[in-house]
Image (cartoon, rainbow, N blue to C red; front, side, top):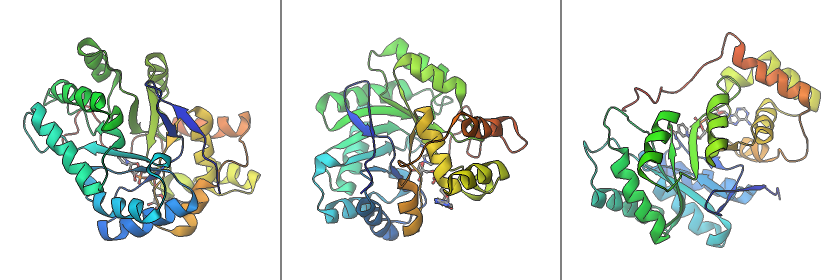
Length: 282
Ligand code: NAD
């Protein structure tokens, strides 16, 4: 069994540095995929209400027989369904997620996007403060927040998000945002850590590092994340890849390997894959 190291979040909660992401896994496949991940040794699962697979994820958790305290479950508030959120609506959305998951608490609850054009995440964060105080989420945080959004939170609240989950991979390494997180005591969690697959993993620079270590491209990219201090949540529905993505604790990249992967940020393929948080209002 692979032992995944943990990071201590700013409220003392411990979070595995490698987890399993379930975006785009249909609910009726989620039970099998999450079950495979838990069997392989993953203890952290990243879902969201908008992924519509909280029920299948919850079934896999219940069926695993693992003690709840060994698991770290993240879900997210899909904050586009209302024009303006009120406290009780946030609390209801949170309770709905818990009930779909079949859990009495989650380990991390995130605001999915800042949606700055709506100008309402400060109200949502007030309800998140209440959820954090209740212990029904052991930690609360944000996703896709920019430094300017984090500034606005800081002006209004003394509760610093434990995590900011953002697009991050060698083609979009977010160096400035990572430094900003470090200054503020916020853990950096990388979504699409593999750049969603082929576009990144088939690049010659990645393949060369992989060949040097006798490892797969996905494994060396995950090592890059871990050595930078990121939390990574790769997704796969293929059992062999689910296991492969966890088997990244028996080797290390050296400075030249890290530099070769860092250099992709200046190459022709560099850039975001997903939406820009400044304008995203899906
Ligand atoms: P990812 O970078 O994890 O890539 C997943 C894809 O890479 C797979 O579908 C598969 O095609 C390929 N892959 C996986 N393992 C492989 C391997 N070992 N070898 C070769 N190919 C492999 O992309 P993702 O799913 O977009 O991101 C991971 C997770 O991040 C999501 O499942 C979700 O939980 C989270 N996420 C969050 C947000 C957000 O807004 N907060 C947005 C996107 C994703």
